[in-house]
Image 1 (cartoon, rainbow, N blue to C red):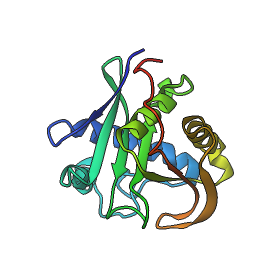
Image 2: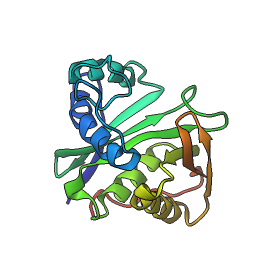
Image 3: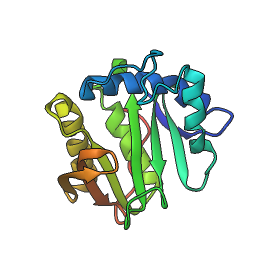
Image 4: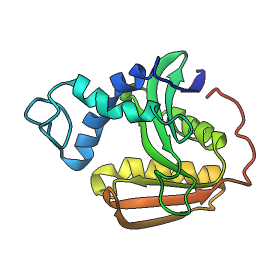
Length: 187
């Protein structure tokens, strides 16, 4: 399998927008969220259609040197996305924040997600931070990030539970300024 990450722009950002509702649906299983009155997974009933939701996501393509929206491609097919933010959209002292990470369910458990995460980490060197749901419903996600980051950093990272702008989360931090390049693009 050939795994690629591809920085998107306004012309191909629709691929991430197409996958985004699947991501929100996945998250609903972790948090117990229901769709709004219009059938959209959003906190507000102001979102009536997916087009409304797409408009909010446009910020990812309006700040090309600050926000980095990547598609994950598996054998050339869109299979997920990774959204990376840099200052001022990070906490103080953080260079890169992994804002969103998604891989379609049919490709999970094959090492693709870890490989894609490692590829994105190699794109940006510095202090990293990411959050994940700390609840028992997300044990798989917690283990994924713990293993992925531990493997990538040879165990040199921090992990703590705490309050974030996104509520109470499991927080991972690491610095990859010294790491060497991740090998190839295939699993």
